[in-house]
Image 1 (cartoon, rainbow, N blue to C red):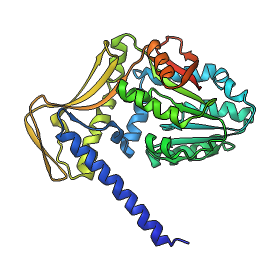
Image 2: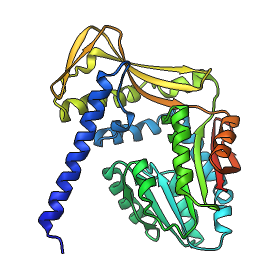
Image 3: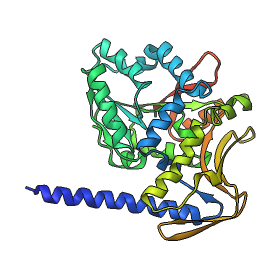
Image 4: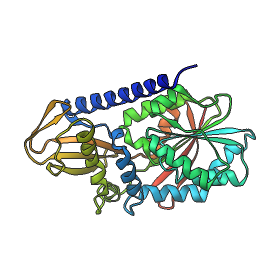
Length: 330
């Protein structure tokens, strides 16, 4: 039997490995050309709060559109899974606060469906909050949280492969990957599922460029703060010397490839120190922060078919701004 000390040592080692990975990716990104920062590191404790605020903004239409879809069409979305007539698992990648997912969980709870909900998130803090909320709001739901990156969760597969799975990737999270990387990620998901499993994916559709750009350049400056908060995190955790006022938040949208991108642009020639590394910036030099890819319906069909899925049905909001696409693994 392992001692408590051994457990503590293992935890310290794991925390050290995460810190080293954070430092390596941040420094390498800032020394690369063009400079980049991984958007997955936006989500420290403050970043989690800021992202929840973003999702509540009127200009961030994605949240309301997906709420509408799940609220109005929840029975039809869940019907293929319930028709299997056996216990199943819901594995949600990037669960966040679970507000949208709770719509489906309440529906399943009301009909006393036999299932286990397995939220996956990189942030243990977010998972703790979600678990506490579910105990209060839907206490009958069985929850098995997985604190991991998407890749770790898909590799380790802590769910029961013998039981049917509905894997979910809501909120247009796939949009955080460039098109090629999104294809590779869907391939990983396909490998983790077996024939007959289902995959529900939320995707933002290409539309009026002004509508899209406003979602990433809100008048209250929350998205700006969300991006700049990563500089604060680097200062705190990696002895950085970023001065946030010396960087401008700059979002763009290209309707040709459907990519909305965010940058932090240096307002002047300057030097920044990160973990002892000197980072030189020219005036006007950008740091590439994140991408939010938008899709056409033809892109979605191709993405599913190329990775061993068939599109079971697309569920749209009233404006057809957004789609929750239900796929079946072949």
